[in-house]
Image (cartoon, rainbow, N blue to C red; front, side, top):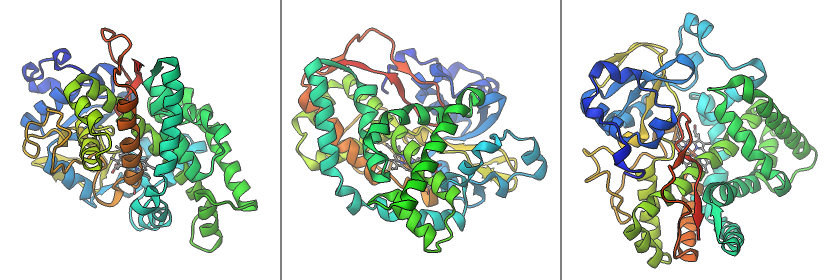
Length: 419
Ligand code: HEM
């Protein structure tokens, strides 16, 4: 797997009793989690591990169990539908100022979830998204023009971040001049669970900005998604201002943090598999190859390492293990995507792999709304990068790869490259 198996601890030697002490949110773990997931798949397919702020999470690692967890309505997204009153009273809570964020798609169950999802899904159909291809190509070209003039870039900050951020900002209606602030704000949101005190002020600025955007579109509608949601609110679709706010936050966050990692870690994987990179470079204009290549990079890198948390609304048996009501359950997408029971030779990168039933975008009611957009961006960005940088390589191939220590998404701080 990418990022050298040599660094991997010998997970097969770790006594079973110690598996629960592993911190799956640390940078060291993020550098190469695949050996650990393989060990769990074979010996402990439903296992409790360390999670943020001294809490624990049950991780589910085999493909069929991951799929079943994602589809099981007894595993709730809204903790209020699952936790006991005592658990709710003593659990880790976000501060009150952030309460509006509790109305996001990923924190709701049916029927509220389905009502809200219907309202935005029109904007993300494959047909609507295909219309953005030309814009994605123009943004990609202009970023690569700047980079090739300089001869080097940080692949993350100078390429993988701006492309999805500019695209989602345009869909929502955020003026381009404001886009640079959003990276800091969405990172603060991801850091909330780990370091609330440090990140709350940035998240508050983020919310204030978006409230102003909603107010501006309420006065003066434009051709953007915020205006469409404001119109739905005013036509009696039972959409509240907090729901619009939550939706914007989710789209801006989910809309780029994960795609950044697909482009970033996907490129790293190609640099580590030069024959596969050459294959895609020479076939950059073959739509069939570009498509299977992006699906394989989704599978191989799994930018969302786990799905977001779910909560059983009763004591629930998952693959023979009883998980208590109200416990945090994480479906490990990266593990399902490397399960040898489903994928032949799963740790091999094969850009022509078909079929490729990966779970990188999840499954069931919460299946990624932005999947068509993420696919389009990667299908445009990665082949263009390879074509325009025939000698693409890491600036310092001996330097350790700079992984981020984050829960849920798996990505890089930086990736300096020479073009
Ligand atoms: C490579 C890029 C992406 C990956 C790997 C990814 C992955 C995922 C996954 C795994 C889920 C389900 C989480 C769960 O069930 O707990 C999800 C949900 C979601 N994603 Fe993505 N995503 C990506 C890009 C995007 C983009 C570009 C957007 C928006 C423009 C987006 C918007 C959403 C939304 C709104 C949901 C919640 C859907 C719901 O709850 O009904 N994602 N994504």
